[in-house]
Amino acid sequence: MFIFEHPPIKYQDPWTGSFSDRIKLLGLGTTKKIAYFYNQVDNSTFRYRVYNMITVIMQKLEGVSASFFTDNDLDLMDQVINQCNILVLCRVKYSNRINTLITRAKGKGVRVIFDVDDLVFNTDYTQLILNTLDQDLNHPGAWDFWFAYIGRIGATLKLCDEAITTNEFLAEQIRLFAGVKTHIIPNFVNEEQLKASQNVYEQKIACSFKRDGFLHLGYFSGTPSHNRDFAILTNSLIKLFKTRDDIKLVIAGYIDIKDELIKYKDRIIFHPFQDYVNLQQLIASVEVNLIPLQNNTFTNCKSELKYFEAAIGGTLSVASKTYTYKKAITEGVNGYLSGDIEWVEKILKLAELVGNGGYADMVESARTHAIDNYAWFNQGEKILNMIEAR
View: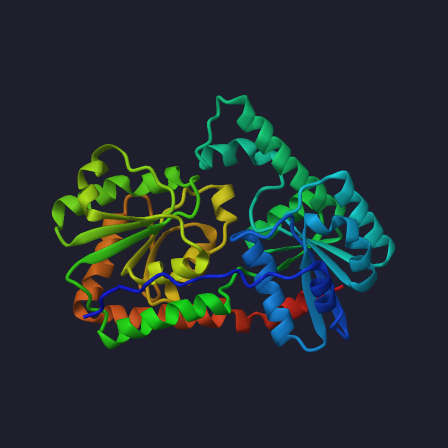
């Protein structure tokens, strides 16, 4: 029997080093040198769009070097511009200093590219974004913050020569807004995530995915802004709790449990927000990963990361039918897609597979698909295509 009792991994950020260390890293390239700029090191956008990219470049692309710089390095960026061939600004908000940085880079003949993984650059969508993220629409401060945030990102994007994003739906939004050539490099899992998932996955294989007699459903929110997404599941979860005693719900992150669902809190396991390495272990501990999303222009721009982060740990997903999840998931082959009223049906289909052994075959399909398309060591060609494109 597979029992999930893994102690938390003692995680340390791998992205440390002084400015001197990081500019030396940039200088290692013999053909191309790529400088990534992001406002600050964090556990979300920086990891996917900066750290992961640098890892692939330094380990997989011969003659190409990459390093990162942040707001703390702005006074020293002339040194960076004098070395790099490409400057990638990742989700950077406009300011006078950023304008100066871009102008100087272009003056040196450096390609300036904007990387963004979300629809957060066009103020035409501010109302939709606030609604989707469950913000207080009656609070003037919400409008002041979001119009400024989105507008400043859009202003920086329009100053750049090109863009990079995660999928074709979002790429088209960038082209319509800024009129720039846009490259697609998906989000993907890094080496630390793969290692964290592997041990749990091997235990699941050894036990034929048999655990403790319960079916564990997982919802991993990440941020406090997913209450409206989770609400899509509420009635379906209540129905499942009422009709089956063998279901538990695992929640990590920030979600408010309301209404009748509170009655079943003894069958809900809460975990605080996790760093991304320990989150991989937690996702791998459930049989069914739930990915509910409202279906609109904003959510259709989002990447499929919740699918592939689950798949590499041997966990299958039921996801809403947004653009990227419809592209990633083949119904009944590597997971299931659900409309708003289909969640119970699709979850029970996976539950049936867990009971008859078909689950392992689908897990293998999902994991193979995820590694082939979203493992860090398979991203070199996409990044190289961006580097060589003119």
